[in-house]
Image (cartoon, rainbow, N blue to C red; front, side, top):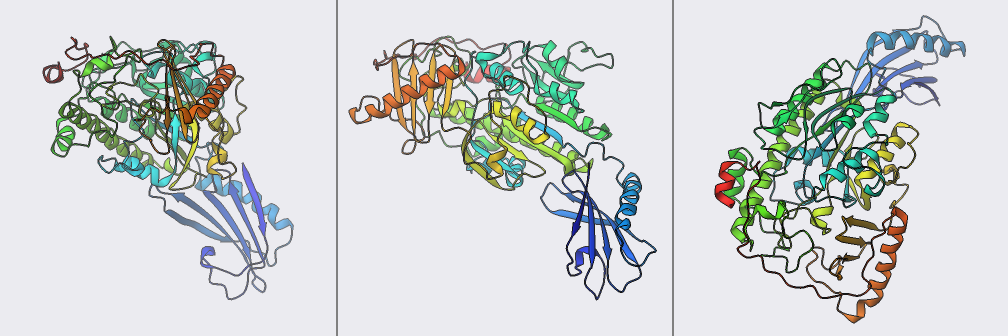
Length: 567
């Protein structure tokens, strides 16, 4: 769409590329709706025999600076600037844009590049306050965009939290209202975009069935159907020209490089006639924690510190302690040396993935797509890695439920952030809001757009975290209550004074009012989302457990060196 603006008289300035010694009497600017990247300025000055037209292109580089280039100027051959002149300019504009801006069919809607990590804690980005990890390209995104620092996954109905997390992301619904394993009978985000003129491309992990992927994407390469694999032997498929998935093959590179190569190839061949939605679902930093040797050596040499809430063991069974795959990846009790090494390997996977993200962003810039692309970065869930004596993500502690979210692109403030409570499932209604698309029925998230536009301080005042039938949590700005219905245990944390959830205040009488208030809030959330699990009214002290020396078996995906080191 083209917008026409007429401005009041102003003084000539360097932006007009004219050396006029008289004030400008009339100025028209004609802008495209693609965030004002292309414009024509029509300038008339009293006493001058000509009016001047300027076609310019203004693009933002990934570093955030703007480059404006004038393609040329033309004189109208008429003195004065009568009303009919604007009509002539509009006609001329169509011709000029067809000559100088041929790929403007996608201008009404931005491209969308969605980078999605696997099992990444929210505190593993240097720009977000972690000086012990190297993430220069994620730091660059944070500097160029808007960060949501209290972003959560809405719990999960499976120990493989990535399954419900990705289902909620793609459907905009909580796991109570979507078939998380198949995504049947629900409109998916890429599916909706495809119906509204987008080219949809997918690469990487898809853990919600092949039929749903085929509904969602029109193009795809190196797609991994499943939860995990050896990062050097990823089973992948492509979408063939016949609309069918090719036979499974083993990827020829490390997972993050493999998926980056695929989206880079897509970016280089995309013709720009339609906007694109490119979804890159990394399998890093999910285990096996086996980054290429240089990326783990850098952290072995200077290991990350232990989490502040490190414990050798969680002193009670939260329902996932015995038999869970993630918790078997290290011996009990957890030693400081073991956790430091696993953190080094985990950080190495993130730094290596960050490098591939840098390659993708560079390709986005080189292909000319960057100027009109919305970049989203997020992760499906967090991870414990020594926090509370746990290794996995099967808990409702902050380290496992809170995940990064960064939005970068046209109209997004640079280098800003919010502490407002958000969910991954908010991204579906957010994109509908940004693109002017009617949201499909049943979306349960909220548009986040008012947060970066400064129109709202929050979109919700509390967060509910339901995990299977084993754990429930609710938190507000300060207080958090966790319930373990199977064992009747409750935990109360003051997150202002104890952000790492180390001191359970449930037995202290002075906090009974907070407990009752949070219990009421949790029940309100249950009613809202249709959660019928019965919760304990009173705390029962949990039975203590000690898993020291418990026998463990490695899963099929762990490479030999990890088997030898940790099993």
